[in-house]
Amino acid sequence: MEKLLYFVLLVVGFAKAQTYRFIYEVNTKRDSTENVFTKDIFHLDINPDKILYYGRDLFISDSIKKLQLPNGFPAPKLNDFIVHEVNSQKYDRYEFLGWDIIKQESEPNQKWILLSEKKISQNLSLQKATTTFGGRNWIAWFTTEIPFQEGPHKFRGLPGLIVELADDKNNFSFELIKSESYSTTNQIDLLSRMLKKNLFLQDKEYLKYKLSYYNDPFAYLKNGRVDWSQTEEILLDNGIKLTKENLRSSTEIQKKLIKKYNNPLELDRIVHYP
Image (cartoon, rainbow, N blue to C red):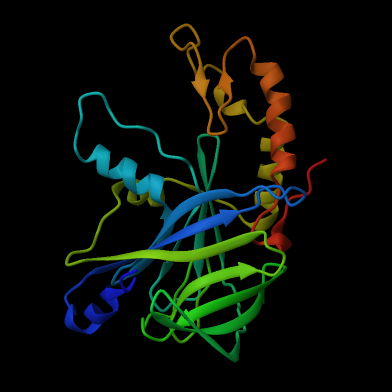
């Protein structure tokens, strides 16, 4: 394999670059009791002012929308996304619930332990580090060859980019698989609009909102918000085809799925459903 980050050589020589994009493969065990993983692709965009972490589906949908096709564009998979200002400890996390975008703020405090163990992966020299964050123990491999103290999700603060990351119970893993650079800031218009239209909630409000959503996960489709005379079905992210006739039974299925797939990365912020 060619050096994954030939781009590393451009960090100095390509000083005019405005967006450095690092692409991660993310494997998630959504149900901690099953050995089944969901694979997603996420982007980490390092811009002059903001750092964005979001699902690739958002990027693809945004790119298609910019083509202004006559038949519209496909709806993206609604993964959460995270934003923080350059050199800031504060993170804004945005979560999709129904038709709402919930915003929460946090300042994660990660105390890294640098270990002497090193390895070569994809022609990059990596060093091992560990930390405890979100109620889980994490093992990271970072490289000083890429001088960004960033990583996926809310992980940052090591003396180089995080290339590999996993928790010690094998619930989550992240691996850098590609990088790109842009001479101008790469704008994600869909994200820009979402940043302006959201519902900010403190922790207690957030818990109340999540429990309310669990009790009636399709409330946002009621009260005339969907004209069922014009809509035969609504396809949900999990593949459920929602119709006016199966709304009640689908509600019970959705509640079971919410409880089943309740294995957040930040385990100390888990919502305990009744």
